[in-house]
Amino acid sequence: MTIIGNPEIGLYTGKLPKGCELCRLGSKLVLFITGECDDNCYYCPVSEDRFGKDKIFANETEIKDLEDVLYEAYRMRALGAGITGGDPILKIDRVVEIISLLKSEFGSNFHIHLYTTGRYVNDDVMKELVNAGLDEIRFHPIRDEYLNAIKIASKYNIDVGIELPSIPNEEDRIIKLIEWAKENNIKFVNLNELELNSRNYLHLNARGFHVSHGITGVKGSFDTAYKIIRRFESDKKIVVHYCSSIYKDLVETRTRFFRMIRYSSKPYEEYTEEGTIIRALIKANGFINEIEEFGEQHNLNQYYVMPRIVNYLLEKYKNNIDEVYIIEEHPDSRRLKISEKLIYTKSQNS
Ligand code: SF4
Image (cartoon, rainbow, N blue to C red; front, side, top):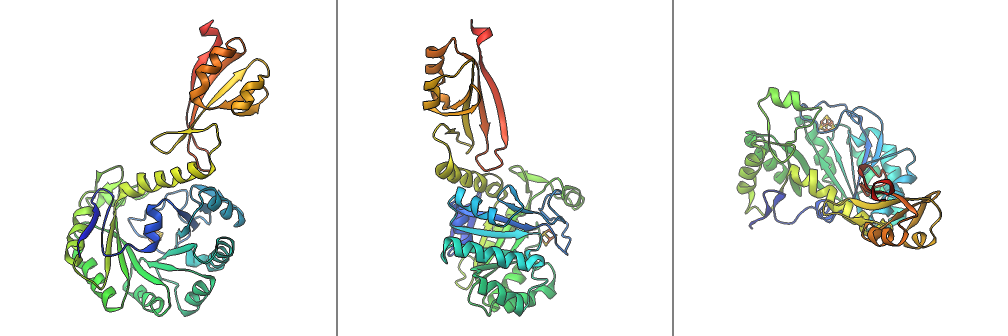
């Protein structure tokens, strides 16, 4: 076997887990089911506004009603969902309800994976998850006593893996865990590049960890993961996969954004290489019939149109157009505005 991939994005041996394969296509809905967790890892990547709070997010959008998760999944034509948190098992009823809802709406091929420490996973929990239709479970066993949950899960007919950060210089501990996973027929081990964020940076800095890769990747994390991958590159019993912070920070979100643009952008919206949407806002001093045909009326005498036809409209309706703005936004349902630039005013051009 050889090592496949690119160190900037990710490396793996063997076959990528299905959940990761779909994530790489930008087709996985990220479902943050609760911020509650009874563990307290010093490197926890969950942000301040989510950790410990019982909030639900579908991709970047906060959800109040579980049915709204379906809307988000439709917007990106998701082929699956990754359920994360916090520890989702703390809200097992909610998890079971949403798995059942997604499977009944999108069918049994809609692939669902879930992350947990395993702290609360037992036979009853596994039965509920598997009966609801869970396809893949990934454990983050931060204590040895959580390993028993992985053994329990491996008795069920779903894919079982381990996912943990690649902490610099901890290769001996991680290799020991991978050997244990092999003995227990675990399918894969995902190693995430250790990430520094505004919530964990003091704890990481205190341990001598600093960013050196992309915006958040900690120095030495890749080197540790690479040594481990090399060690298992010819091993046929287990797949080891390294996922970089750059992939998570940039590629994953951007790929998902392009998918949303493809399936749910408006005809008058154009897109950028970064996966953002741009449109022009025209403020006129009266109703202009033709502009409406090119786009959409936003407000009284205000229209959204494609940026590329602004010059044509300005030539034709110079006297009627007061201002033109170019707006750049994220394509997801929050429509986070990145910029709004005034590119034309009648007063300065008359
Ligand atoms: S188990 Fe996960 S969510 Fe909980 S503290 Fe650790 S990293 Fe954060």
